[in-house]
Length: 343
Picture 1 (cartoon, one colour):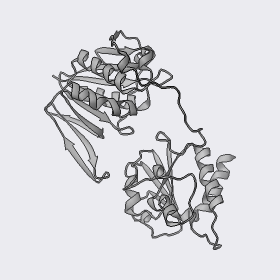
Picture 2 (tube, rainbow, N blue to C red; picture 1 turned 30 degrees about the horizontal axis):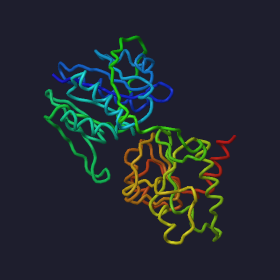
Picture 3 (cartoon, rainbow, N blue to C red; picture 1 turned 180 degrees about the vertical axis):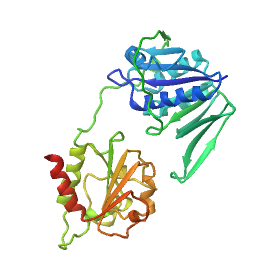
Picture 4 (cartoon, helix red, strand yellow; picture 1 turned 90 degrees about the horizontal axis):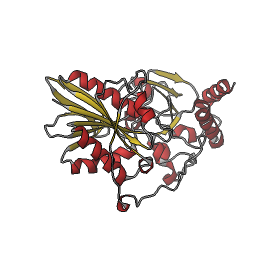
């Protein structure tokens, strides 16, 4: 009989992040698939009671917590100690956690202490005949593997944007608060503040509804034979601000700086999408001035609705890579779109 533990940490406001609710939804579904399986929920943070009440009706038999000021911020030593205490108390055989920065950093160490195994970037789970198997991608999302293990405990770090988030009414529950003593040697890392760009300056937003991808065409000579980098920057950033969307780029655009070609100053390799970049997950995506070739189009395979704007009607987007292709000038289209959004 599997004892499933879904573990999560709170945000600064005391609530659970969306990826934690996705992990809980996956855990609840797995319990339904495995005969005799039980579910426990473990929470870490300064004050986890509001978070526990928000998921009180998920069907968990136990709610375990490690709470206190020293567990509010991300710190490897304290996070690892908290997860270890919860996993031992729950006697968990399967531990499901969202792939947040805190857990991606601390869980591998916990696995070593508990002599278990861990899988990262899990994008699928299924159970048949009482046996759990998971899926994850390799080689830049070109090969999907199905894995299973006999070793327990088995830790699973779930990628965000894959599993449906748990939805249910809040309620009341009894929290089992676990005491975890942290010596001075475990508190040497101090968080003295957070430096973050303003909302308008930030271009990478993993939770945005729309991914806007800019291709190298924005920095090429236009129909009048001139470069229009300033206009390109204004229209791209204007759309990001109006829609609060995330910004992506093809490899050709972010690599142009080393070739002596003019570039957009706000674009970096962090924005790169595709074979040598990221594989984001957004409900919608809009590619502009991209040709839809395999190296960057492969990064779009998890975008639910794909649209593109290109002056070339025979580009790669027209070969089944986009749901809708607009054969038009992206400069003109985005100028009109921004005008409508601003109005």
